[in-house]
Length: 315
Image (cartoon, rainbow, N blue to C red):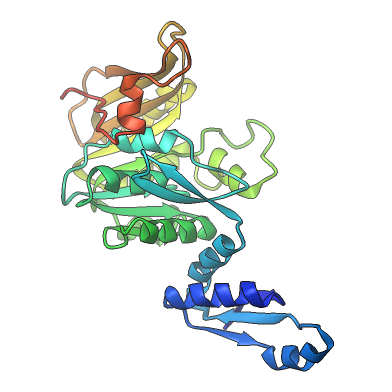
């Protein structure tokens, strides 16, 4: 077994063990005898909570929530509850917009590459609860939180979260299996700037073992013929993304995410392509996020509040 935590707080220990039991996680509390010997002296020994190795990350998710190291955030007008770390990379509106652009239907299989805490994957199920969503991320702690979020939203039957590297055997085992593959990948090239001190933020924002080419190659490989590949990325890397998608994809469409209409500049874009489709002209649309007074536009609220579909292409 593996040690999950140590505590001499009987209230916290009672709460944690109750939560573990509620999740069906087998656990042991050791050193209770030593604590009982110290009780007459108004002292308590640290008691160890042990869990099976296979259950460790699920149990870790329970632990950090109990310790209030995570926040419980309400998204999509309270349709979605998302557990996220207080420190490190936290989901903003990007994954919600990404999910809104995927043309998912009931019964479709969706893969979210670099899912993090699962925001985009779970947002898909808010809009289409009869889809089947898989989230893949290299960070086991975020996968643990995404799994707990799925349970919190009663989505466990349709949402699966997998810890793994897209450079691993997972890529080979899932070639051509998904109707839609989406991602909010790291935006910055390795070596393009100083790495964030927080490891989770660094992994989420800066390319590591998988650069953009490998990331997109994996996404295209995981999609079935005729499936969609959708990414949200920085506008300055648009042509790089498009060039990579042209190897195996066509019907490329771009959505400009414009902060305000009169500003006319985009920091982020969403790019979508169809696997093995014919090459052609790139279609373009725009999502204006804010009014002049900084409130969200009705178009943006339809996505961010009402979980509506936001098609990139009219084809």
